Image (cartoon, rainbow, N blue to C red; front, side, top):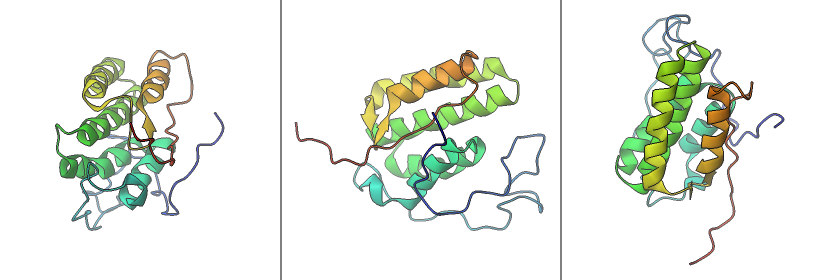
Amino acid sequence: MDTPPRYTSRPLPDYRHFPGTTPHPTRHPSGHSYGGAGATDLPDLNRTDWRDCEDYLYGIDLFNQGYWWECHEVLEGLWLAAGRRSPAGHALQAVIQCAAAHLKMTTRHPLSAGRLFAHSLRHLAHSGPAILGLDLDLMLRDTRAFLNRQSAAGAHLVLDFREPTPQ
């Protein structure tokens, strides 16, 4: 795949955080998000249209651009707002776990990456393969290829903005 699409115009952070290598984004004075206010009053994506959620779309942008730590940070609040055991919560957690697996693989921790990927598979079983505009099966396939070193590029998330067809 070529350059993945961007879904927001929000600027990307100054650097990708790699724990132990770069300044911690929120705790270190040199961090790219140091002193920034965390997101508040986040919507429940089980009840709110994800297409209108700037934080969700930005989290997908971060994933697609290889800002996996930052993606996790942005999507975690939405995961908690959606409810950990809800369909949207499980889908968000699958994305978070895949982002973390990419980060671990990139920082040469393949066993941790494999464990995180296994967690994402369990979340998929509770969310269904297509939710929040995501093709989660494709995300998992591409993440697996990255972890197995069959692909140099990480997974990219392409959102489907079409309205779901009534069942």
